[in-house]
Image 1 (cartoon, helix red, strand yellow):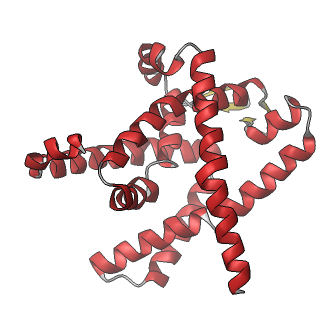
Image 2 (image 1 turned 180 degrees about the vertical axis):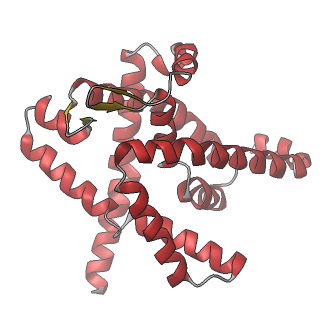
Length: 242
């Protein structure tokens, strides 16, 4: 078991340190160049589209608004990684790590734009809404159904509670136990029940809940960050210098 653990660790280090980072940055720079810096050029259009009308129904198809789509995206991005992940990066690499996060985020936005565009191009009609994503444009765009199936399987394994969701729920349970002395088992049951209620309501319910919770979460996140910066403003010049 020790040998297997070490092997997995070594492979993981190589993939994360070299292969993944190089590929992600390479794609980000390439897409930025090919789209003529779309993430900067289209900021005005982005803001305009966020004011799109709320979810609407046309016939039997249910559509979500641009803001609701944005809220769903933010809900899946602002979480443990932004808190524990950034804290870990600063601990290991110093405040300068934040600068490189900014750089990668700015260029990586072009990759997100391309990914979303492909999802729109190769989406298909579902039961009562459109469905799409990487698995679909691997199957329809690249003409590689096996790749789409493999991606869907691995994504399901990642999100099925064994990896990503378990990390998020564990963090929530630990925080509530520390702050309010609520049993992790009880908090886990509450989280599961709430998740089931939302998920089984389909994309419309997910969008509706996200459009309410995400603005509150995002504003709280921003105000808390600003409060911490203001309370430690004397250290800011040194942080920027580092």
